[in-house]
Amino acid sequence: MLVLLPPSEGKATSGRGAPLKPGSLSLPGLAEAREAVLAELVDLCAGDAEKAREVLGLSEGLRGEVAKNAELMTAGTRPAGEIYTGVLYDALGLASLDPAAKRRAARSLLVFSGLWGAVRVTDRIPSYRCSMGVRLPGLGALGAHWRGPMAEALPEAAGSGLVLDLRSAAYAAAWKPKGEVAARTATVRVLHAPTRKVVSHFNKATKGRIVRSLLTAGAAPAGPAELVEALRDLGYEVEVTAPAPGQAGKPEKPGKPGQGWALDVLVTEVH
Image (tube, rainbow, N blue to C red; front, side):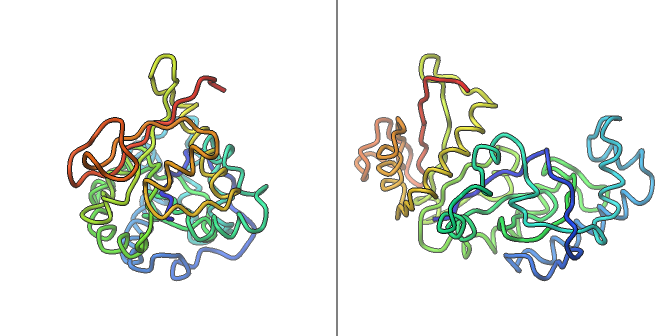
């Protein structure tokens, strides 16, 4: 199982460990694209701070993020799973997982990023600020910059198993599973059951809890149908849209051929 996660706007401070070693990051097929973004981002932020703040879409109160980006090559690092904070990661609670669940997290979790493309939670990175929606003066829109390298690297990372896609729209645009990978991909929405509406904060928290539940239970669903069974066994109420009528999992709402599976997790309490 490969779980695709969005990053978080909120991040912990850089660690006290050794500076970034770009060659040590997972998915080496993304190395050239990473180096290009990293070089331009550092140059931009080391130059005109006001221009950098505008390009990055930062408020006056976040001016310090520009200076932080300018020092990315020398700042200390820590595992990406410690860098990313925020609602989803608080609910996921990587630090408090048992050792076996932590090993599963290291194998299965992949965090998408405007700067790194995608990293494992064990990859050591510095704290930074650069969303996928940024358009750098030289490279242009980061979503478009990553599309080609991702198309090459991600199918290999996905292997032959389930892909659980929990990314937000901006990060999902950087790589869209195709063909047989799409057929074994499941996306998740979290809906407040009485209203059938998505609540952003609660959506993120519930996704974090879902991933934690799967990791803690040692669940290893082979595909989307098995994921539905696993989630229901864990107590989640799930409605399914499968790629085509009649497929395993008996979808309540049949989808179109070639599409991935769309799961709606229904919850009654918003907390």
